[in-house]
Length: 86
Image (cartoon, rainbow, N blue to C red; front, side):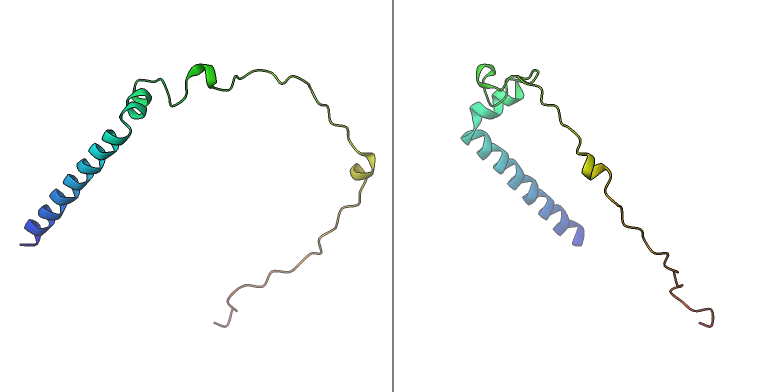
């Protein structure tokens, strides 16, 4: 009986999934088909073009920051979570 109920729930879920997919295709048919064909959502002319930056910006180092003192961590003795008596 449990197997029949599980099979029925699976069939209902599969039917609902197919219904959702068909509804998405009905609403966005052109966008989905163009994406599947490899055209993408945006036309090639409107897409941003990759390439080198128009200007190269060089960063300079600040000598004051390079020579700044760094904090020294104190040695902390780690104690075990359980004592040896436990």
